[in-house]
Image (cartoon, rainbow, N blue to C red; front, side, top):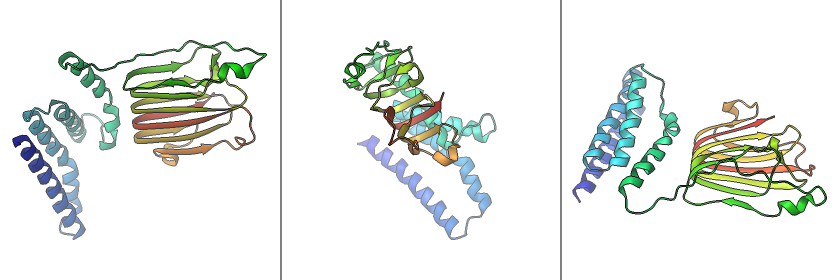
Length: 256
């Protein structure tokens, strides 16, 4: 009960202080210089909040706030470059958290590490028969998924990792003459894909916090959401329909 009261008080103070400052800025009471001072000093407030959470034995959340605010403080001191939206770069802290949790908690955490799936051969006489299944990798998991062996069979896929990276090289795969759906999802991670120049694609990607890079498009043209379709996609027989959904992370799709 005491922890709940401390948490409510800390949140109330932060919200009230922020509301007062924004109100004074809108009314013209606070000058631009003072507003810039707030931008410089708010990481120190976050640091104090993190210490309060540690004292309340909220070690996971408190430690994250301390690390995040410390990086912002080092940016303010000119020691390194780190901005608020760079928070997605801290996703490896989740791996550290899960690792420590596995040592001290009684319940089990499912960890899957998968890399370089076996390549599949195909039958030239019956190419469609080798690609009717839906490849699924799903669950509360941590790991790496890679498709990069020569002539691996490109099949409809539904991939999910809670925390992990994906590397898919379609230029090395056997892509059938039909539309092949590829779905990649996760909380935190990095997605890298290589697409052959002669294969039309449709890409729908959403990254809540992070960055997206598609072919040669500038980042400001893409932001965090992609809805892209090749000009000849509708008429093409061999094509890829790619869907990517990440909470925090980065997506990079290139032509080769």
